[in-house]
Amino acid sequence: MKSVKWIIGIDEVGRGPIAGPVYVCAVAMPRAAYRAAKWREGGALLTDSKQMTASARERWEKRTRQMKKQGQIRIAVASRSAAVIDRKGIVPCIHECVVSVLRQLGLTPQQCEVRLDGSLFAPKEYTRQQTIIKGDSKEQIISMASVIAKVRRDALMTRFAKLYPYYRWGENKGYGTAAHYKALERHGLSLLHRKSFLKRYLTK
Image (tube, rainbow, N blue to C red; front, top):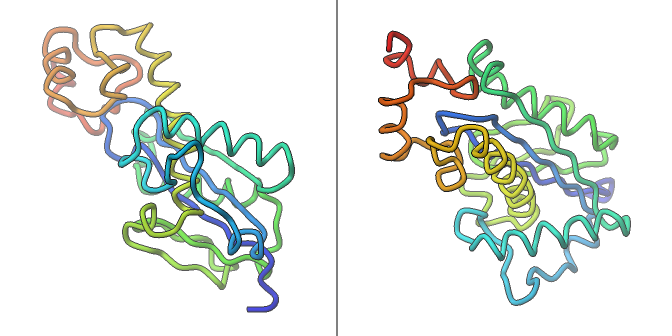
């Protein structure tokens, strides 16, 4: 383990929605700094982004930008649109994003320990990698990646909501809520919907 210089956390946001892109984020922190880090910002504990309030997520996302600017961490984000998800499938898209964010970090694989949430996995050259179920609530480096990905995707869906207000993406962020499905029944599919997730609406 002495050769490990960096701890990397990776998480995805947006696997399940019926509209909008999927996002993957990787955060890299020097191993010694990670072990010594404190995980509260403005009283908000860093944990699974879904368990945090929107204001807590935004405080932490702002903090990560400061940490990046100060050279304390590296951040990489990749996404795939609904159209690409329809063409390639959600799982291949997520894996492409994982590969992309690791390349963006620009770190030597042999010097990294990669911790991934859920069912994610890194390319085989990252020999020190661990997939952790509910990792976004167990490992803060994964939690940080989760928060960054969610804040950025949520902001994008809120902007998209201005183009298609009847789907209420500002509230549901593209997930299949009752109101979202009701809007689909009335207005049909938009260019930002995942048609492969909504095949029964293609004939409407």
